[in-house]
Length: 116
Image (cartoon, rainbow, N blue to C red; front, side):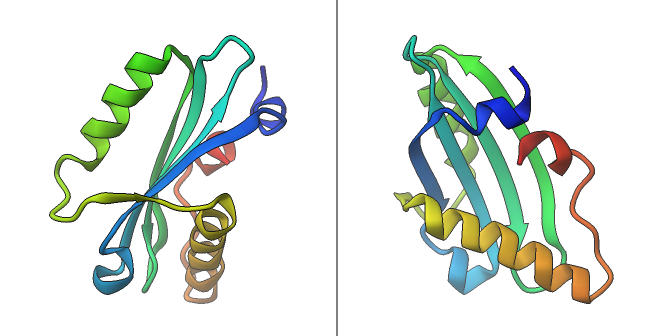
């Protein structure tokens, strides 16, 4: 399944660290569920004040228990809790930061082509 085909999967959970607006760094997880119950996720580290998309990765077709462990691992280093957000907010944070950074001359991280 290509990244374009993965976008056709139903959106499941979306998370961000609770203090993203205060500290300017957002760790965002967007998950999509397969008919099998497995999950494909995109993970985005976003600097909203300057660099835009600093880092990104994805995991394809993960069993749900592995997905839960992976998400816990992503948010473990944060001083604040993760909160669930809707997809529209996740999308706005990511694309807004990318567009702002582009005006400052910064391009998104190279793996953006695969994880978007």
